[in-house]
Length: 164
Image (cartoon, rainbow, N blue to C red; front, side):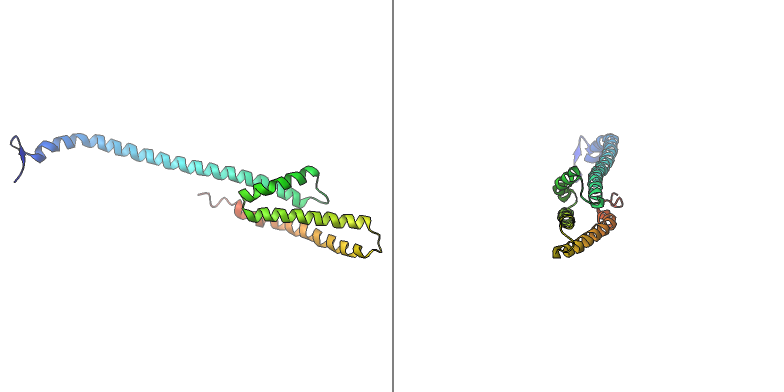
């Protein structure tokens, strides 16, 4: 039971139309593949641009933190203000761990400044002077240690290896 149209089989009537449409279908398929490849490449470029922008923001904050940690004595008012204002930005860009670290640094800086002020204003015989000397020594060591740890602390955030 072969259905026929005007004495010809259905295949014989449909096949020429299908064959005529094959080149157009092939061209559409190739164009779709090329468009998909271009879209994929644009996605990768946009992702790399986002990573670069994020790296630049992180590096600026890293430089600020480096400057603050390496500051000897009392940092300038502008550095102190910039550092304090950057805590929330760092929490957003790096994560809560770095924001907490920066807040702890502010606390340590004030402790050091308080100890230094106590040393300046306290007579040599005063009992609180001994504690201030110990605090100064411990806090100076803290800042030296932190300066050595900064690169290690921030390297996971600044790694290019994950930018595939």
